[in-house]
Length: 120
Figure 1 (cartoon, rainbow, N blue to C red):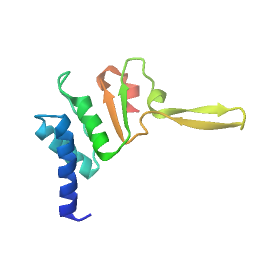
Figure 2: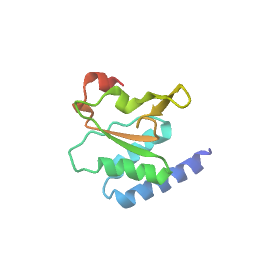
Figure 3: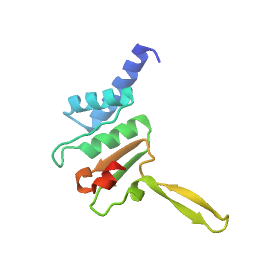
Figure 4: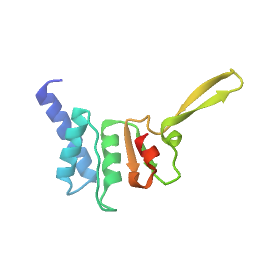
């Protein structure tokens, strides 16, 4: 994609997000920089500052699937990654994908999960 076309696309996405997230221009700019480069984003802020809304509005703006996982102390790695389930009719195991198989994943309260689950 040409640089000017990519810039125009990112500006349209930013404008769409900023219709929902007012006064968060810097956060939107940084989020889109990570999105454009294919990177990951860790947003750490106080409760009620719009982290979930920011992630949801990005997903809606680009037409991506959004999933939210609430981390708790009893959450297992298989709860995030998925699990193989035996299909008796076909006599084989089928993999049921967990929520990590999505375009945009909001992992809320990661610090509450066990170290084993955090590493998954």
